Length: 112
Image (cartoon, rainbow, N blue to C red; front, side):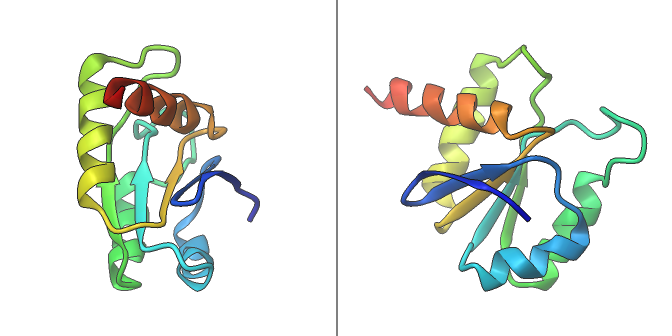
C-alpha cells in the first residue's frame, strides 16, 4: 500500500480495504480516519468494514465523510476535533488522498 506522509503525525492515501489495516498497524499508525462517503463508487469497501478491521487491530477509527470538491466548515471542525482527540500517527483515506490532504491543510489554517 502506498501512502503520502503530510506531516510527522499525518499520512494519507486512496481507498484502503479491511485487509490492509494490519499493514497500517505494522507501520505504526494508531488511528484511521475515513473521509470518503459510503457508496461513492460501486464496490468500494464500506467505512463500517474498515472500522471493524481497525478496531479489531486496536486502532481508533473515525468516519468524517466529505463530498468530493465540497468540503464544509463542519467537515473542517470535525476533522480538527478528530486530530486533537485521536492518538497519532493518524492515517486518513478517501478516493485518492486529495480530500484528506486538503482537509488537513484547512485544519492547519484554522489553527492560525
